[in-house]
Amino acid sequence: GMDAIDGTPENKERAVGEAMTARAIALNYYQGLGPPDLCCLSKVFVRAWLPVDVSNLPIGYYHWVLGVDCSCPAAVSTYFDALLRSQHKAQWYASGEYKVLKATFCIYNAFQKVDVRCEANFPGNVRTYCVDGSGKVSDVVSEELWSQAFLCSLLRAQQKPPPLPNIKILPPLPLNLENKFVELVKIFFWEGAKLSFPGEDSKEEGNHLLASIFKEFCTANRRPDLGVSFFSSVTPRKPALAAHEAQMLMLAGETARALEVLAAAIDNDESNALLRQAQAEVYLAQGLHAQAIGSAEAAVQRDGSLVRPWLILAAAYTAMQAHDMGLAVLNQAPMPPLHPPPLIGLPKPLESTGAPAAEDA
Image 1 (cartoon, helix red, strand yellow):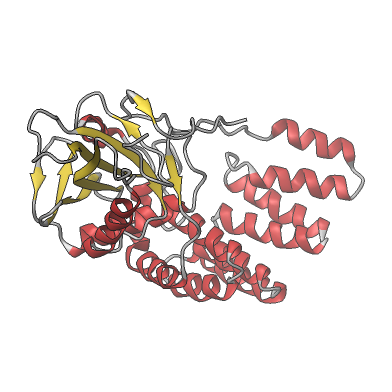
Image 2 (cartoon, one colour):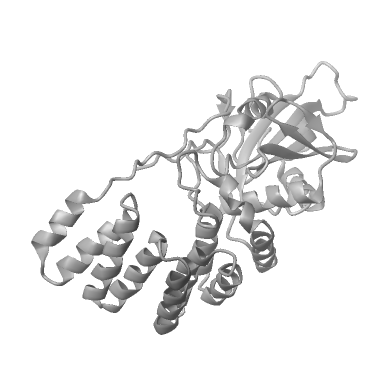
């Protein structure tokens, strides 16, 4: 339609601002990394040949987006400019066209449970502010608040997208953002436990969502060297993180060094189940099944609620042709609950200009 933006499917609001209101009400209840970035636009139909017609009320539109460079307000303004350039231009003979009056970009900071927002009026100025779950608005957005929000945005962009109507997914991070990402992970690593889901085991300092997404990032980009240098820098404070370092070493094909790192960490932290689990993982990958069983049993003795060591035991027994043992072990394994966090804070759009949400198979 005439109100569309090329290449960006949007949802139309019943009342201007309802998407941001719904989001603000949900701020205290979001879990984990929270919702994708939200971009809201208000547009007005301007008649051709006539001065601005006051009788036309603005209409609200919104879309979710993953992977936008929101490293600073200027970067967000660049995204707004791209949207404005793609706004449908009317033919010369048309009765008028839609103009964007205002754009707001919302980035959820999961560390502090606040929404950091960047608002632009056209023509006019750009304002940044933040909103908390009690509805308090502050115009003071510290560099830390913005950096944390940007890091959360980068983390969300690397996870499976939620099944939302009209979510725009941009291609993987360009190199300049990758470097920024690594830098931010280093700065906020020890606060990563704040990103856990309730009931998730975040007792283990440093063994959290931030660590696992960073590990996936290094794996997906075939950069084990990044992972090794990062995790080796944090293990002195928390020996259990050697489990991550070992995985990165394995990825780099340095099995012997992975085992050395784990042995040293186990000496430091005898009671740690995750280190034994990591050791069992390395042995299993090497085909050393008897050693894998030894380490996995040690892990289970220290923490029976971990699922992975039971699976390693089953795999190792089965590889040694002890199928009955493999099955017995699987029957004992605890089953983790599988529940994606509920999607909250989402208004029902009046209509959508884009494709329907992808249904999960």
